[in-house]
Image (cartoon, rainbow, N blue to C red; front, side):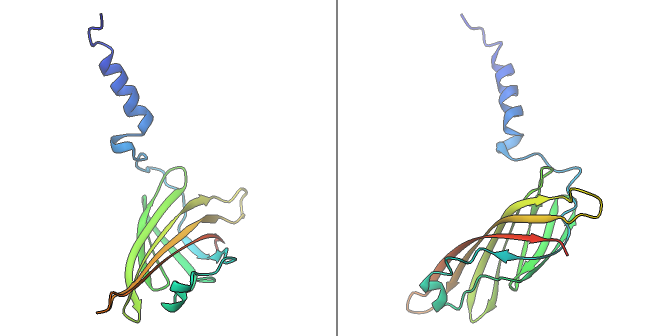
Length: 157
């Protein structure tokens, strides 16, 4: 017969294995020094879908991503859209933002990726990940919408 004395033990074990409340990664106390200027390069082999070309969407190859960091919080701007997010102690990051950079189109951009610190003194830091963009132009006739997802990489200038 089980008296329930193991329930607190297993509840604590579950809490430890999920990293805290809601399964989120623990807050960063010694965060990686990701801040700096990165010139993004995208894998554009597939191009953008035809519906995106109609909206004037292009993958922002060669765009500069200037990342500012305060603790775990990150801010930047990509293709005219302000993005913000966080980085974990392990170097994984997520930044997202929404803006209206041109032609009554609303762009929502999300960057998910990883930061790799320089391997040696004087080495170069880098980031890799995926840019996901959702683009919408509203109109009286229903509007237009498209989505783009593209891998990226960059080294810090």
